[in-house]
Length: 90
Image (cartoon, rainbow, N blue to C red; front, side, top):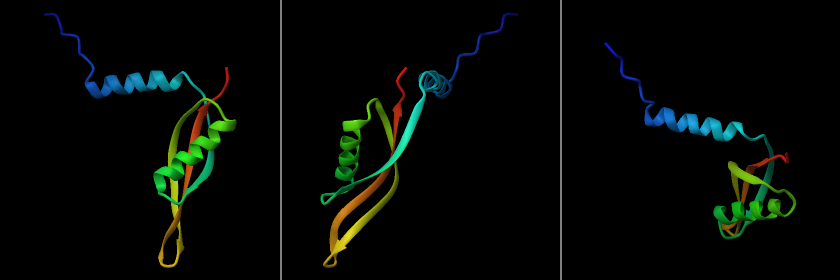
């Protein structure tokens, strides 16, 4: 009797693809804080834009902390600390 070959599940196939993709790179990460008077999204975008002026090959970010400034009983500003990952030059 011949056995059917098992096909990987969708989840297993995605994980295998992710491992192949990630294992091809070496990443360094730095932690920075962006600010904005508009909101957290703008604070993140400001941080990434500023980092991109001096660091290249930016690949991902992770939010570490969110803080806000208060002025006159209302939100005046946002501070978002993120870790940014970038690939090292070959």
